[in-house]
Image (tube, rainbow, N blue to C red):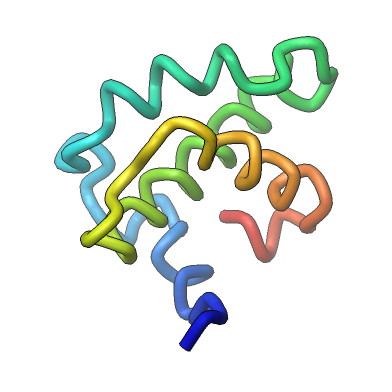
Length: 88
């Protein structure tokens, strides 16, 4: 199916998986600071952590893709426009 299975919302929870065991964790961490760095939401640690959780969850859910540069901007827009209940 071309649509995202929204069970990913549960995967984004900080307690659902060990965030240190994500294969692309280092690449994701590097890209967090590069993602909309001028936007006030990503100046806040909460915004950065939300984006990091979503990117790590996406890389685990879509194992055939993992993480690739550019996903951070798409995910960031979703994180900015979703409430905390959906993004974490």
